[in-house]
Image (cartoon, rainbow, N blue to C red; front, side, top):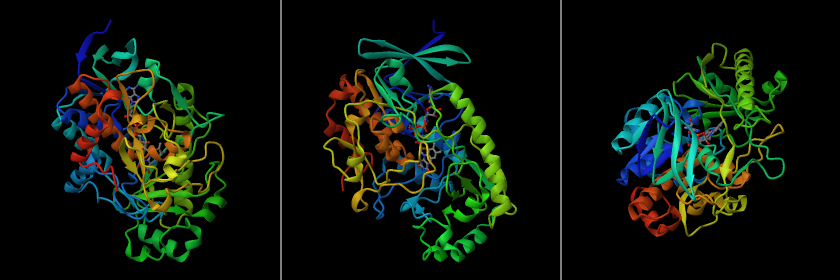
Length: 450
Ligand SMILES: Cc1cc2nc3c(=O)[nH]c(=O)nc-3n(C[C@H](O)[C@H](O)[C@H](O)COP(=O)(O)OP(=O)(O)OC[C@H]3O[C@@H](n4cnc5c(N)ncnc54)[C@H](O)[C@@H]3O)c2cc1C
């Protein structure tokens, strides 16, 4: 028996990039919206796992294809000096990356949720879903004040792990076809005290030791935003980590880097024993990599760890099996869909589930963007549920691009806007007029067409 019951029109479960944008969009549409998050802060992987920077809002040839609420967040962060905005990617992997200050973002996002009239419940874990027929009636939360029931008309699954779809009995998929293995997990960490001028000088002297797309010729005039390589140093280290280089991004402080180099493979991010092992392995690797960097890399002589993720970063777990599953071909061909609700120019970036994994990325043809259709947000079997973010309906390969933060923000906004329309019209999300949804999204700044 629940100690307390809340009622809402739209119930958004999971306060990561997708959930924040979904809740803001639903709240702004004028319907009563609740956002539920298990941690004491929002941001999902961006804050809990130190994922940084956000990439990418642009195509490879520099056209911006993600705007809307995601861009509003950047604009507001820029106004308070908590982001430089979109900057050139000096790794050379994409056109732009978007650094931001995670602590400022946590506060700003809550301000934006409140401005949109969203009720936020933190420290609340959704662990049960009550279903009648093909409809979710309520979700149950485990909290410090006991069990809480949240009833709603439309529910949005932005848990990253498709927890709500799974608990409601909607069909879900996980990992690649066949062995079901998922992309590896990574424990991210930051180091301060880095001499970035020395790092840049070393890159200019030894370009062959860095990613082949590094814009070496432009480097003298570009502020360093990211570095991938130190191939020789990494090889000589013989660290027991299945990667072939060091990957890091600069900021948010001037002498700080975010290191994305640890790798934990073969474990399932929906299994608590695997998660426990992953945390243990990930934290050990952080100490190993940080020591290797300060002992060996030019510019890191005085650097030390400044922060480590509160949890390991999880790239892939469950996803919904929806009315349309976005495929690798759709991405690579830059396919257009009549029911487009978001776009992205990020490549298919699969960190190897089992092997060492070099650069096996696949880019969208002609440096363009692909469409994400509305049907990918709609699960089979449950009529009043939408998904946004990492757990939308895709293949394992297509998930390797839709999972990036800006596209999660964009699909979250679409799910929230669709939920708002469904509630106001008193119909199921699958029955709304997609043209109306597209109008709402475009009016809110989203980019849906060339
Ligand atoms: C190691 C790593 C590196 C990455 N690198 C980049 C990068 O450089 N740039 C980039 O843009 N993206 C990157 N990504 C991708 C990106 O961070 C994620 O895919 C994105 O955050 C997914 O957003 P989401 O909102 O769908 O899910 P999440 O960010 O996972 O958010 C889900 C939220 O739901 C909450 N939640 C989950 N289950 C429950 C529950 N049952 N009850 C209540 N709350 C719940 C979680 O606490 C979390 O806040 C990376 C991801 C990883 C793991």
